[in-house]
Image (tube, rainbow, N blue to C red):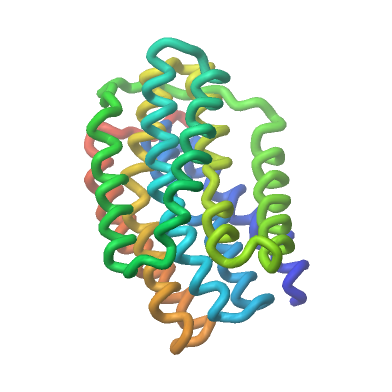
Amino acid sequence: MPAFALKIVLTPLLIGGATVVARRWGPTVGGWLVALPLTSGPVLLFMAIDQGPGFAAAAAVGSLIGLAAIASFCVAYAAADRRWGAGVSLACGAGAFGVAGVALHAIIGAPLWLVAALVVAAITGAPLVIPRSGQDHGAIPHPAWDLPARMIVATVLVVAVTTAAPALGPGWSGLVATFPVYLSVMAAFTHRHAGRAAADDVLRGLLAGLYGTAAFYLVVTLALGSAGIAATFALAVVVALAIEAVSLWILRPGVEPEPA
């Protein structure tokens, strides 16, 4: 299957499946689920196919750094939602991601262990300033356009980033690919329909899931040059899912599925 056709088939399938599961299990697990590299993972895969393994491995470092920018998004959103609604909170989160991304881009050339340590510190520290609600938020209604809109936005983002990658370069391409599109949609939608506390649970769930995503990027960075594209991404998925399973096990106490 040509790369472009794969992009417009694989991406919406990933996002559609993830969205259905997230709706079933509520805000916290929904946030955890969108932490998976559902957009940036395909972006890196298609970069490896289109631009070569070296380009994709370098882009994975940019995506790894992007996780610290996502932590900034979460902290800024949670700080803003104490006083304002979803729109202002979303703008604050997006602004924080942009500022952090620009600042963090400067360390892309740093030793990988230092980059990884910074990312782990960011995603570990961010939940400490986001309150845990401990509430059962119940089912949240979703309009009919929500699922197809997410699938379309995801596909457009993957195609756009992979098309612009040669001009952006690997570092910026990887970082831009991590912009939290689905987190933005889920947090704002949950905020409007279930309140600030539920939105904060989405943010906390996402942060808990970023450890597996960080591992995914690390495997791609370290293995892609020697193991080949298929083996590297298969290993990255297995490692990420194993770590995600542990984080989900930690989240699961007190988390019950929403009514079908």
